[in-house]
Figure 1 (spheres, rainbow, N blue to C red):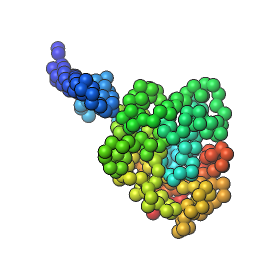
Figure 2 (cartoon, rainbow, N blue to C red):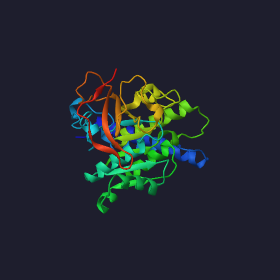
Figure 3 (cartoon, rainbow, N blue to C red):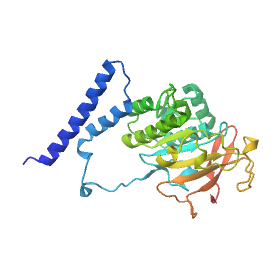
Length: 312
């Protein structure tokens, strides 16, 4: 009555994981570093030992491709965050990207969801102040928000996330460039590692990761596009949802010289450039912009404009 194929499959997984951990232990004993992301992935395989290779008739189609963000500008026109995937939000400094991440966290905890935020730029109290500029949270809501303000590498973020991300609705990271390390690699290679590790973390933990990123020096104020993400084209490949903040009211030279998106007092734009799982915008392109209320004191509003702007 023994299911020999299943037994052999389990044995093969345990053997491979054992070899990986033995090699990691040997490296540590010799003073070498070990990438925690690799160990996390192997631990996941060990915990899900029967799911490494499965027949199609053993796999139920995913019932959830997108998780609601509970923020209407995203949910109404996109449908939410891609589940177990990487969402990238690109923006120039001072245009409201940290405030956007705080807004997403606020909406989630108010809907009884847990959120894990990594802030490389601010301290935890500074980020909590930004949260309270948006709204006042109850003690229960504050308890659903976890913040780490250590300066961490991508693999260290993955390790901390694996420890604290159970039942988390999404993981937010502010921001990508501050995870880059002077490791002897080029900026391009180093940033590629950031994007790849965060995409792998999202998949392994089965949690959406929302990663904030800067734009490159080639961006001079027109509508931001995929090539404006800083340093690497890897982001275009691994990002399941890629959005940009376009807030011309905050920085004068961001006014779009082509006039495609006008400067509107008290408004900013969320530009969607890539949606791996489609969208609900009602436009004939994956690239569109959503007009959203913006207030310098409380940040992004709750309601988007009535219809998105279709972009080429």
